[in-house]
Image (cartoon, rainbow, N blue to C red; front, top):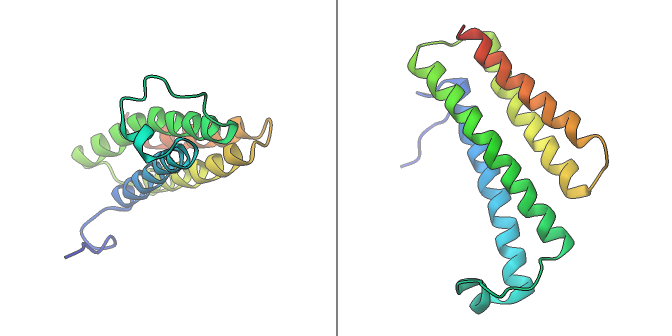
Length: 136
């Protein structure tokens, strides 16, 4: 049976769950593009001699990598705060800001809009900082 996300989990853990779901989506998109571009047999092999990815697929790979880097930090912050019993309006808001900014970051990155992507990234970092400050 599924777990009710509003039940036993804190808001921060719920935001972590949604961040993981976003990350999973960002991994699946370039995987699907690889199958579309190269075929399932080529993608299922060792991929030693693959052609250069399309512009979109290369962008999606970079986006997934960027999300992975940020997920390491966000996950650690949320879990350490949870283990330490640190939970406040600021930790909740920080987690919500992180997830919202990462969704915006993904849309902006996929669209290829210049100069605004770093702003979305910075907002997500501010969300993480809000969690970290509560533990100091």
